[in-house]
Structure formats: structure tokens, C-alpha cells
Length: 214
Image (cartoon, rainbow, N blue to C red; front, side):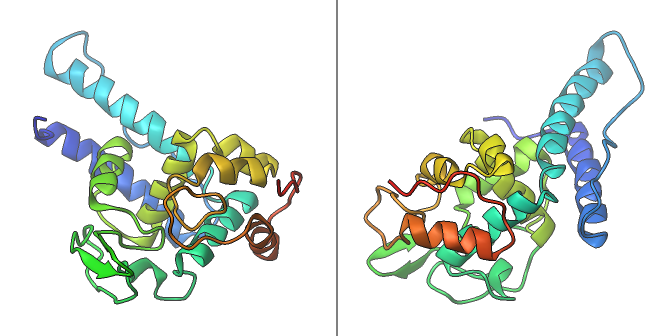
């Protein structure tokens, strides 16, 4: 695939700035800052289309990050992944830590018979993070970017509306191929039970409307 050009990188940086505003202000929702001057054709028109596409995707997930059920679901995931502590955003697969949050570290680690580049609070594989960074305009691996990336994955699984509505058992079933620790994950790694996941969600402040465990 052709590498993103300078105009795309500018758009990504602009959107990422909105992520930092959200993170600094905790519950604030960033606004769309990716607009450009209008042109009918040529490079500027392509830039506008690309910026609009990235901006729309960014806005669709960044606004959801502050939702209480989304926050609780993210913490539920982190508990299962073993990254709920204060160092969760800098945790490698296997439990060791890194310090550079300017990018995904992309360092394979081995543990329990598995080797993985998974890193961060949601244990993103490097390949997955590359896709998310391009799709949502996330140029770093900061906690704000990691949260938005995780919500992006939830949305891609068709589970974001379920999470917001409190249909958490349904959302877990949709997301358990993304996070191997979720109940019912098919990868053979240790998982929590559905009851444990739901309890962790509620304990993190979530409002549960779907309590089915079957």
C-alpha cells in the first residue's frame, strides 16, 4: 500500500490535537477541526474528501469515549487484559513496560507459549494499531489515542450501540474475537466468565440492561 502523503499526515495531526483536548479536559468531547478551504477539483478536493472521511470517523468514536457505559466497558476490557492498573497504557504483552508513547512500540514479547506485539491498555497488535492510526488520524500511542482506538474497534464489531445501551452480554459476544480475555473468546487463552465480565462492567460504573450469561 502506498504510504500516506503529507496532506494526509497534516489532517491526522489536526484530528489528533482534538484528542489531546479531550484527554486534558477529561469529559469534554473534541470538535471537528479537519476542515479546509473549498475547491472543486484537484489536490485540494482530494484533501478535503480524505480529511472529511477521517474527521467523520474520528468524531464518531471520540464523542463516545466519554459515555459512562463506554468508559465502564473499556475498564472491563482492561481488567481482563491485566492492564487496569496505573501503568496499563505502557504494558507489553507478558507484563513488562515501555515508556515511549509517541508510537506503538512494535516489540514482540513471548509468554505462555505465545509471541505477540500486543501493547498498551487494550493490548493492540502493531498491525491493528497501524490500521487504527490511519483510519482515525492517531499519530501517537498516548492514553487518549489508545482509548479512541479501542472504541474504534468496538464500533467496527458493531457493538458500540450495544455498549451505550447497556446490552453488554451482546457486546461481549461481538468483541470476544478482538480481546482474547473476554468471555467466549475462541482462541484458547484464559478468559473471564460472562458473569465476571458483567460484574466488572457494573463495578466500573456501567448501567447493565442485558444481564444474560448464556
